Image 1 (cartoon, helix red, strand yellow):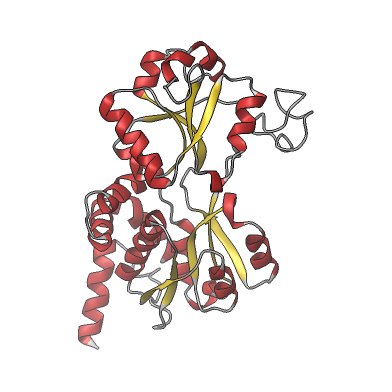
Image 2 (cartoon, helix red, strand yellow):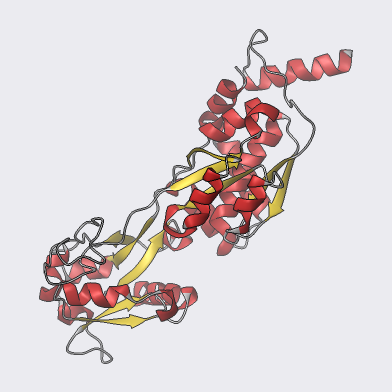
Length: 319
């Protein structure tokens, strides 16, 4: 008992907790099971909060789960929580999970998800009116290649990811040809190659992604998304066309099994408070995917270096 009391006192001192308001953590020795999905960014989002939970004293288990199947797993309490649900691609699975009554939202993760057109610094030099999309037809020559001449070249998503940018180019009357890349790797090669050659590039891509740590990319200012613009010609800048607006901006949510708050109250508060920014995640993605560093090492280093960010969450969770 003396040894245990000493450990608790030292833990409280480490985190700056008041003995009068200290919660009993962990409330259960059973593991909090965090879903691990298919991409590096999600691994980071999950392991960062998992590391914080471990430092609070919780037993944490990382469970590999498919993006869609994890929703049913939370309903069944085979997964306790998931940290990175993108509104742009979760579809009906999100609403169905909430409708079950066994899953709840526990706040925004904090990442700013963007899918849109990007340009590099060389493009800005050759087309100084950017990011305004209205200047693109004045800069066709800067983007034209032997493949697309006399039109400019726009590097698009792989065709099997969708071809709506072809419709956008037509709706906006742009003298450009959408050239689909073969894969994510091909998109990255385009960006890295253009950077190395200092050549203008306009490309369809997304953030957060590690490429933003090594290539300076800026969003083209496209007509903002409006509900209905993808299927109603009366909505958007061109009354005679659909797809005449930018890609819809989404959000990234955290979700949990409904019983988590009762079983692990302090952990539930911590998970609800937890946020991560693009500027946090992108360098970690680059360190893992490009520099070959281990996920656990990168995450631990971030947690060590950012105590001022997460210790207030812990303190509030322990009240």
